[in-house]
Length: 192
Image (tube, rainbow, N blue to C red):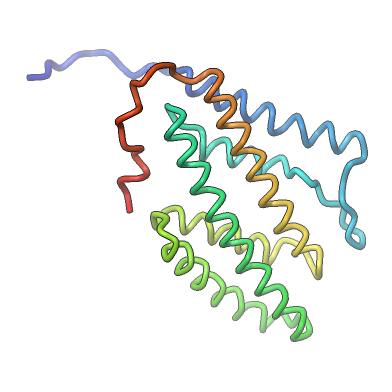
């Protein structure tokens, strides 16, 4: 029998610290690259090769209590980013082939959202993650114009990969040691 206590969960944990460190790294690296002039020009757009917000989002979504959980969340994040990005690139290609008509793009975005949700679920990710894949799709399809959207999709995937690698390395270096989480099934693996 569990007794009721007045203890509240800690307001600041080692997980919070690891997330903040990952965000710091993922914000710092693109900032340094940008200050050094390392960007990719497409027309008048200058794209970050490592997108700071995308990498930071990966930190927030992938950094979990243990290494196994963080690794699993990172793989899931990479899958949904790839699916959303690929569907986005397909829609961009169709949009450009049809003359970039905003009315046609509106219909394509709706169909692409469905395609992304179905494809994410088909590869076995939980539905909540499929929705995040659809966010990637929407960003790729609508953030920029012309071929810049295709490059944005590629750099978004690279930025997600960068953030996921940072999370796994930081968790490996600073996360809980021992086998406390070795037999535990990650919470998000139970969802789907």
